[in-house]
Image (cartoon, rainbow, N blue to C red; front, side, top):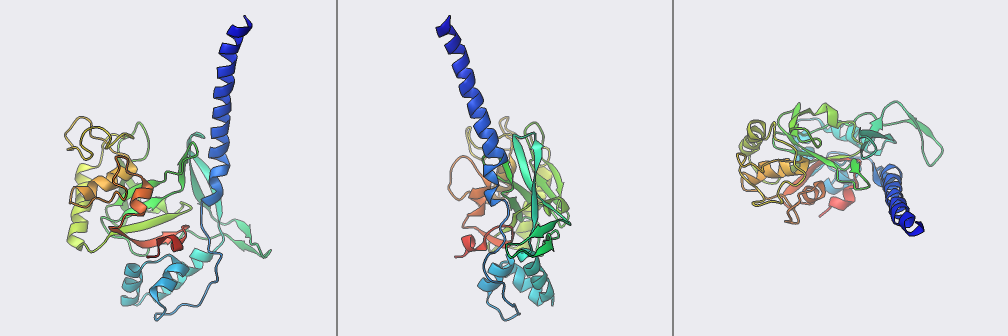
Length: 285
């Protein structure tokens, strides 16, 4: 009887221990990197400041800075700097129970700096150079201790197409809905024409809307099956990858079967247009 009891109870204890460990990792340990605020010195910027310094101070890449300067809107660069350095309050909110959560900004909160000064937390940052075909990416989303992030394909200045969660089809999302993530990046395929960017966005709207969520996308058979094939499905990172792969650009940096947000974030074919809540030093050439 005692041996039988051990065969039942000990596995149950082991399973409960694993579940408890995963819960603690998901709800506490994983929050060490939810939003980067520079610890280095804030400096005065001007239109003659070099691009690397502007990037470190604002998260804005060369493409975005050049457009803002050309349009006489350098003041937006300075506003981006203020927001990049501003203290912020972040809350972890549930997407699917405790299993999947997202780190979101809280507005209007009082934040105490290391110096002891109390300031209001940052306002929602603005997207300063967003174009059709761009990729929006965050690493704020995490499941059972894995900070896998979330990705969307930009269709126009107000709309994305994205695959959100199991049991749902890909759908249209709002650009505004991305502003409260604790970190995000705007990525753009290098050296492509606006016409091609628009074609990719149109393809996303026409073909990649209403597609079933498949976490296993790319694992079975051809990594990029035709949309009419039975096994065709998408998850968030795969959707953006698939759209550009259709036009001959493989943005998966490690070339594996699983396309992740990290694979896209470090693709040699993508440039950073704008960062928020991420350390720009990790993206310097």
